[in-house]
Image (cartoon, rainbow, N blue to C red):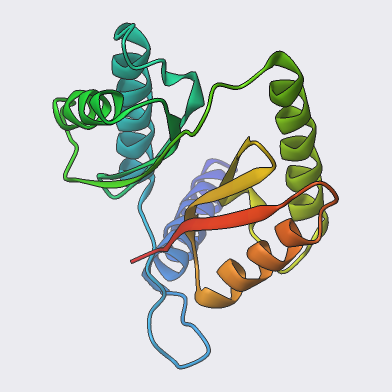
Length: 192
């Protein structure tokens, strides 16, 4: 009986090791037969830590007003998008981001705001943002969880890291089709 139990445990362990090695060694390929760029769990965790650290640095600086920023990180490259009031805020945000440990590069897609915004316009922008996010979620060709949406004065800014140009094109078309959207800016980057 002990021998059968040991054999069962050994076989189960061996099957688990073989399964893990087969799954771990297989690399996904795109339609052209080229390996798809992927990240490891460690890289994803590092990127999450960098994103959180950048957001904290932006929130800690009262002059930046970081609530209009979106921060995303992929393989140490930080993508900043959103709106700021002036160039000084943009420069401070870039400096604060650069000071965060682990940041390898900054892609700055922040837009300077025009005139002051009223409360009504902020509410309208929030509604448009929600509509665009909902429309993106409903489109199966778009990986909408990788796309951030910011709206100001009926102008939608899409940012984030997507897999290919087709996803960029689809996301832009979906956003343009949302009622109330006057202009869509593309600040999305294709994953490397």
